[in-house]
Length: 121
Image (cartoon, rainbow, N blue to C red):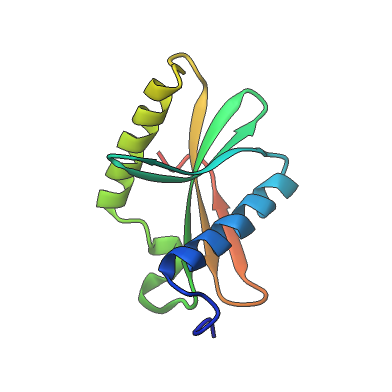
């Protein structure tokens, strides 16, 4: 379905991260930054909900084959995400900040199914 629409996997990822961000804004969250990179990995979205800093991992799959988007988070990815979050907090001197880590799984095409899971760890 998306063949030819995106130049590469990164463009596809950015597209679905934007969809996730728009979805979360409609749910009342405020964007802080997108695609924070560090030596440990990347944080797709950083949002704020009231006083809570929300780190969001976004995964897209076009079908439910192999478990679909909801089952796309590996143990390795979660470890990299944790390290990236610690790095972000240290860089921004946010030692006593309330935080939460969420997962947005997007599956299928127009309309896509969006699942938002709060507090994944």
